[in-house]
Image 1 (cartoon, rainbow, N blue to C red):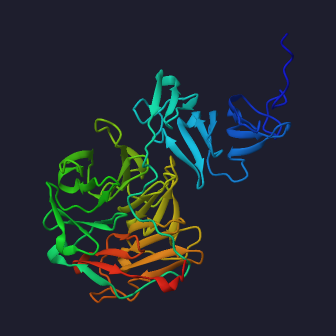
Image 2 (tube, one colour; image 1 turned 45 degrees about the vertical axis):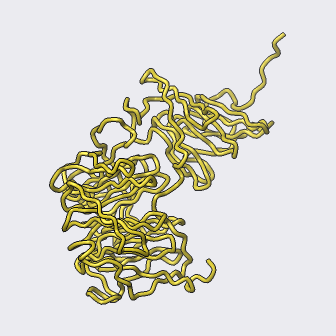
Image 3 (cartoon, rainbow, N blue to C red; image 1 turned 180 degrees about the vertical axis):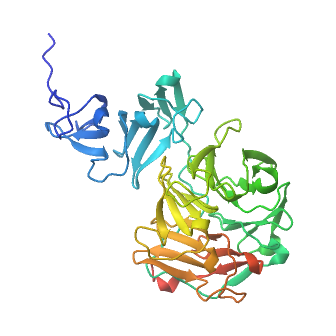
Amino acid sequence: MVASNLVAAGTGIYGSAADQISTPLGIFVDVNLDLYVADCGNHRVQLFPPGQSNGITVAGNTSLNPTITLRCPSGIVLDAEKYLFILDSGNHRIVGSGVNGFRCLVGCDGQGSQSNQLYSPFSLSFDSYGNMFVTDTFNHRIQKFLLMKDSSALSFNQPKFCPTATWNPDAITIANQSIVGQWPRAIFMNTNNTIYVANRENNTIVMWDEEGVNSAKIIHGSFTGPSSLFVTSNGDIYIDDGQENGRVQKWNAETEIFVTVMNVSSECAGLFVDVNDNLYCSLYDEHQVVKRSLNDAVITSNSVAAGTGIEGSDPNQLLDPRGIFVDVNLDLYVADCGNHRVQLFHSGELNGITVAGSESLNPTITLRFPSGIILDADKYLFILDSGNHRIVGSGVNGFRCLVGCDGTGPESNELSGPFSFSFDHSRNIFVTDQWNNRIQKFQYLEESCGKY
């Protein structure tokens, strides 16, 4: 005969105390008999160790280390390393935890019926290959999201530095106007130390190995005056063609053919492709950052990532945005050039936080027309402070000037209107020194960090 049930969690009275739950949905019990509950009504995930009636909040606003905001979570899965995967139903997405905390995995572009969207999903499961299956409730379908085997492989260098990292103040010119044209803006260096520069004078892309500019490959295209480019790990090149032709083009590394991948209304002063294959463009003249998923078979309309489209300095506004950077948590950093600040827009948020500039919470640096941003491996900011003709970096002791600290000019220790920069595998800095019509290399001094 069926025995009476025992209480595993909850008092039977809804509430938010440690021993209470409100509208519980998905549950997961691991091999240690730890019970995880998607506590929908309290917007959290609770862990109840065996025999314990008081739960521990492991995800949600009231967790010990809050890293993600949930809205009616409905499903939970633990992976082999006991990292959490949560179906965040009210936010129409799936989030996952890892060594760097939580990040959005799928459904990161808001609710809808497109292939990259969900609408009130309810439960999820994995197959043996790591692919994800989701009940997309209000779209009346089951969605399969393929695991990208190389999703953790970034195409660019994101070094780790010690607090005293130093660069030789005297740069080496590695390419002049004869190679990169007049007023170069866009540079990208991949993890193989291949350098890509957009030649705005000849409307070409020049690419060469760091040690061999004389054997440069020149890619001809039908773009005009590009201000930005981005290279993915498979070698595809995304290049701005917005000012004259209202588009972003992709050069396919396999076919060596250009195709249009995004329609835009102005110059893309910054381009970025995130770990979920979303393409971002900072619309300089429209005071906005837009994005679209590259996984869609057809070009869909762009969604707004930041900015109202009306210039201003409010938290939800931008003024002449330039360089952008998106980290693995899908947090968006914008060089808000006209407002002389760097704005951080957390994933899904339209109000930005000033993280550098005179209006930041802890002002430690004054910026003038910042145009480029890179985060290092520890999430410290490196900023191309274009109007001050220098590069500054943050660390445990705040911001400091790194290169170009002696004012503007044509000397080896000076820059003039620099626009973008990149790191190589050895932590050297490469800069498009725009008004000096050259690419400068500032060598990292290894002795400044010892064996760090």
